[in-house]
Length: 181
Image (cartoon, rainbow, N blue to C red; front, side, top):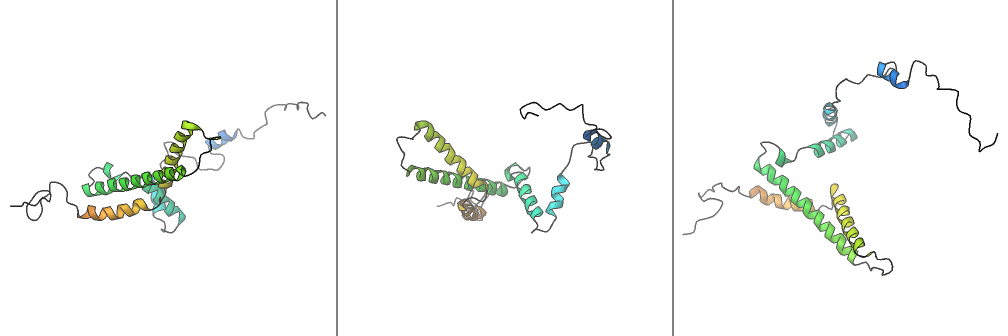
């Protein structure tokens, strides 16, 4: 038989005892549990994983999922103003760290000598700028460098002692303004 000649076709479809795999799965003949008829609901799985011991990998993963899926404090109905302020402060601290890392990467890249032979012109500069931003955002998706967390910790101390606008102070003045006479 020549290796380049086509193989002879099969005489027909292969016989499937008891029907096709899909037919057997749908009818329950495979011995697998049949899925519910309606849409799948996984809320109980997350709650069950959260109830496991805290050191278990499933509980750690469930906490990460729950943290990511939690509504931001500013979007929760009836959230207290202080909670919304903490949320906005955390976002601002994270944004600051991202901008700082972007600027750091851009300044570091500026110290590298560009070869006239391989320099890509304006297109390469735009690409490098976008690459720096993307790398900074990627670094901030995890814990980041810790600068944003330190900034949040420091600023949240001031936020805890800050007065909400419109509240009166102990001496009766509005918005913390003291009357001088």
